[in-house]
Amino acid sequence: MEVQIAVSKIKKYATSSSGDTVEVVERPNGGLSVVMADGQSSGRGAKWVSSFVVRKVISLLADGVRDGAAARAASDALFTERGGKVSATLNILSVDMQTSTLVITRNNPAPALLAYGEEIKILDTPCQPVGFYRNTRPLITEVPLETGLTVVVFTDGIVHAGSRDGRSMEVDTCLQCVLEEGDPTAQEITDNLLQHAVTLDQGRPVDDTSVIALRVTPVINDSKIRRMVVRLPIES
Image (cartoon, rainbow, N blue to C red; front, side, top):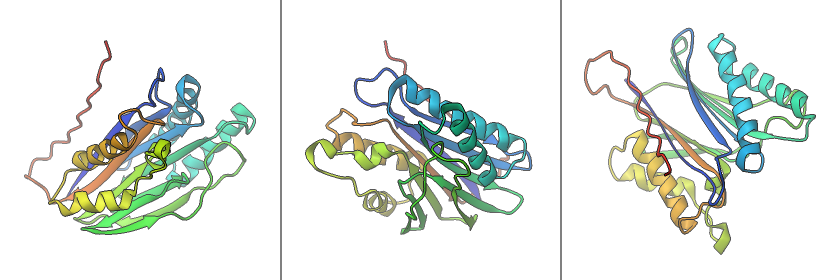
């Protein structure tokens, strides 16, 4: 098997910077974790909040702390720093090689999508963002790593897409359409979902928007090389 992780993101229209932060960290006992946070509001203030949360989480994960404990610690740290007046949503996707499982950690009211082949399950049990209260606990779902598994998480820019015109984005339907078109890569999934959201917003995103897709696919070749590709547009 091979795990693909892809991220597509765009900032809110007419803002200086995105309030979303996404980072990838190697787990000390094998595997990878991708961490995404969306700071309250938008612009530089939101960016500080999301970066604060993500840095806290990835430092703990790199030290071998479990995902749930890292999420709780980040929430407590933000609460202490800002007195419970600022929040952030948080998602962690972890490929745990010790247990051969995918761990999905949510402190995000927006759902996560879990697909086996073309069958999609929506993980939408209500949960709290981090930072407002002490001892805020995440929701954790753990599933076996197996070929055909796809997980998609996103910030609320996806949820709010189209809201200017009273429209909304049915993310599960969009994902279903992408999966039915063949065997998309993780990058094709995130690009398709983000582009649909931007189209609903008529090219002017109503909020910072980030999408992460993780796919488990058959091994394309027997190479043991790990690869990561990042593309960063530079505005002139």
